[in-house]
Length: 116
Length: 109
Image (tube, rainbow over all chains, first blue to last red; front, side, top):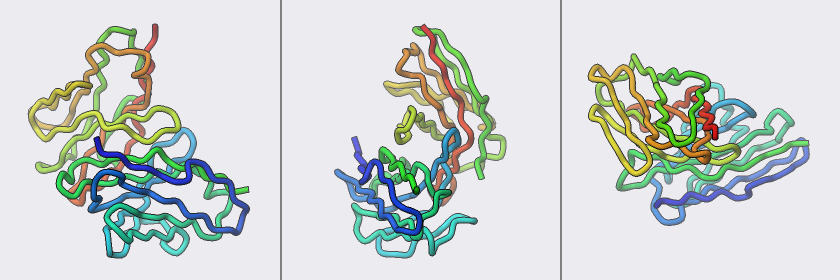
């Protein structure tokens, strides 16, 4: 089956620094990748949609200058949390859709970000 | 915004069928219903999806009402490893998923 990986799985950073999270589709080409955020005991919240070679589209209320998304190839998207603050601490999950079978989203294992 | 509503939690005895309901009364004619589950601190796992017909795969069955305003996910023989949060999602025309609050299924021995 289609596999999506994320790196790192856990990261701790100091307040004010930036951190980059990678999302890779390992065995398929991803037309579109999505980024979600999940706070403890809550559901996943869609942050942005990223298409290869074009600018990401952000959901209402998500700051595009704070959460920089780059989708440079059909197998890699990155999310950079800039000037992180403790309230950015969360579980970040990406998903990808297969170019040929775009109906299903394959989810990565998630990245736990803790900002101290 | 999520187009689905689900019960907050359900219990099921191990070995019995688990029937998880979902309401999606505002679903449009070409929008699909997807089911995913999430085990603690992991990414969601795909289970099944459908448009209007009932569907079955090796994991589960999906029953969609004729008016498409609700559906039921059936796990035929629940095991302890099926304990998870189950999300019913309506995929919009831009292929986006808006997750609702999901149902916490507790499978008990």
